[in-house]
Amino acid sequence: MSDTMPIEDYLAKGGVLSSPANVPPRYRGELLRLMASFVDSELAGSAGFADTINDAPGIQERISAARIVLEKTDHAGKVLKIMETFGADGGRYALHYPWAERLSRAADIGAARREGDMRLSVFHYPLQGWVDAVVMNVLMGRASVVQLTELSRVSYQPLAEVFRVILPRETRHAELGLAGLVRIVDDDQGRAKAKASVAYWYPRVAMSFGHSGSARFETLSRFGLRHTPNETLLADWRAGVDAQLSALGLKGQ
Image 1 (cartoon, one colour):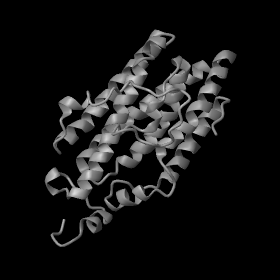
Image 2 (cartoon, helix red, strand yellow; image 1 turned 60 degrees about the vertical axis):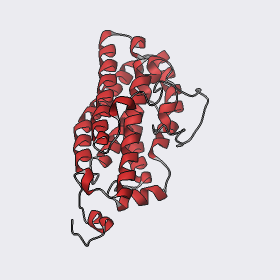
Image 3 (cartoon, rainbow, N blue to C red; image 1 turned 180 degrees about the vertical axis):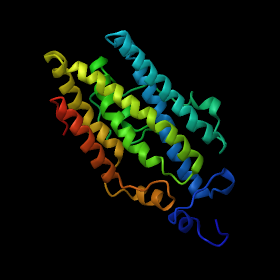
Image 4 (cartoon, rainbow, N blue to C red; image 1 turned 120 degrees about the horizontal axis):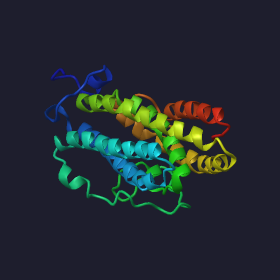
């Protein structure tokens, strides 16, 4: 980077940063916020999904659920290691918040964060049984793929590289969820439960993309930490997940 070129101009031209030593304060703050949101969401997601392992109807389903829990926790650890290079205390971070804690099923908090907990709002809602967990995994799995495809282009290179490692694993999680949903809708009772779960989770997962026309997106885009507007990512998710649901005789919103 040129000593005279403003950081935002450098990043707008496709420039990248690679070390805490060359990260200016405002960029650092936005980068740490982005990483904290990812780590908190993965820790909360894995904690919530862990409770459903014993609800799985067979050994293969239990193996798949356990794999998702393990890998999501590992994803949090990979990004947390980068946060540690900025001074975060990784040893204490996992104890920072009760990650399995959930709101009531009837709550509706939109896209809001809660009291310093940076998880996406969708991870504040409780899962109710195996079918509910599988449906949520299908919907959020597809959302994670869309979001990680975007985040794999962030201008902080060590983080972009980690996200590129995580992306195929999250893609596999979504595939495992879809395979489970195919089995669930094979009978009338399972299909009815799946429809109810889709109706519950679809709008809550949609909120994980944030608001259209977000001023925060403009800030992040100037730093090369985002490239695609929230509404475009949401439309991509809707198109993909609606096609998956339609193929199974289910419907999004």
